[in-house]
Length: 327
Image 1 (cartoon, rainbow, N blue to C red):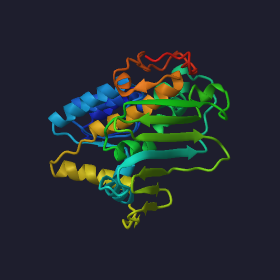
Image 2: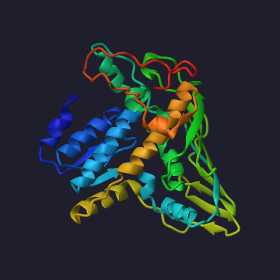
Image 3: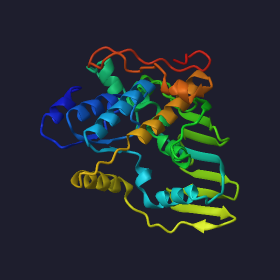
Image 4: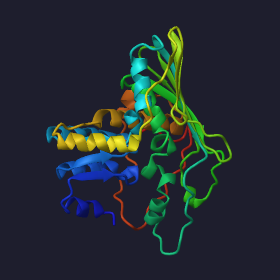
């Protein structure tokens, strides 16, 4: 049931692995930290800024209690990708001025038509990917990995503002496909003049692509982790030499070593900021407005203000740029 986390917390476990729909993540993280548990927290850490602020506070609480908090931003624990970012941060392309990332796929798991006996809430939970209050939309639930590359390249400094477009072109209009969109394009602007461009989509029968391109004053870097391409061309050509590794296993290796060594790891700040970076892009696309980092961080939007119960629940409104308010 919806209170199952409290039964798990009371069972004597030492580590919580939080992988339920993201709409529950802030609440579950707070309960886990208050219970004195180490945590693996899957991305995104929240679906709105209200949740992000809660997670940042929980991360501070975890640090004060010497608890480890590991994020689900798995590429930060992949050796080839880590080597590439080390090279970028060491000036591999000179002064960085443009970033482009993509997360283009053919879609999510198939939605489930409503069955007799399902309440509104159960129907949404069984199709959680398709409802923004539960998933944060695919730009934040899935493509956030590629948006995190932007954050990583910028040494986790937030942008000044962003603007975006998006919509729902190929996703069929059925109750079980909820209110999420199927494509987004976002531009982030940074104080030092860097512009970062992100594109993601869920379109059937189209080629998938998960890549990053970094342009600088002395060269360009192409990173395509799905096929192992890590290349810099320009004044100082470079080809990645690191071996591939199981990044999912590495995350847990690092987490459990930190616990055993009593040297806590805490990904709280960057995992919250990268999640908000994606949420900020969604806010800009849904509303059609330019959104600043300060507006995003201080947004009062709360997509799960009504507590969840397995009963009647309102269907989230379909976003309409120019009409959907920036809260």
